[in-house]
Image (tube, rainbow, N blue to C red; front, side, top):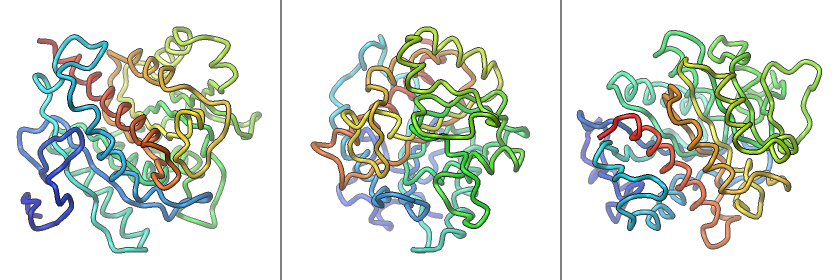
Length: 305
């Protein structure tokens, strides 16, 4: 596949996430940003296929700061980030999307890049976890921000944004015992649930510092993947999503949590379920773009001067 974006027409104004260079695979890149415009696994309101475009557009508001508060350095002095554009797959062919996404994720990982993926609905995390697990040779540990556990058994549909974390432990690609779900505020199987859950009410009562400490204790030092469903945030902070649930985290809650993960063995992140057509003034897209930027700063902080 060519590295020249001119032949793809992906961004008519040569605009990538945070204004980063557009490339299919620069050899010296540390991080690749990949969009996955897929929403055929959606159970509620569709529209997350436009999420990558919305997040990239909103990220323009983050480009003017040479150093992102509260960090004390310029991110791009330490980290070479490229925007790899959107995954291309035949319209309506979920199986082909899965195949191509696993291959594309593997390509970046084999090149030594950390992958930041912009969804798309949450189903895309399942093929991503498959690629990451194969690359690292063991089940991944996960930090999962969401209003829903997404552990709902669905053996009838292979493509469902509510059943990825039912299937992933059964496939041996996810270590549920050492994974945490944060912000949950919908029903799940309380008696037989394999993940540690910090639900929205417990999160509000325990405080940020205790929540961070619990997450760090559960996931330990093994490779950790972060998946952030934007509906983890309260609809006041993220109205543009398919399945909004009142009573969620605030933007500052989420950002403080991410900063508390500095030093963990973070290997990748996805941000999913942004649906710009239900957004107002890019509130949701901006929140997602900012979460991605915070993840990049976490990676850069580990590189020192």
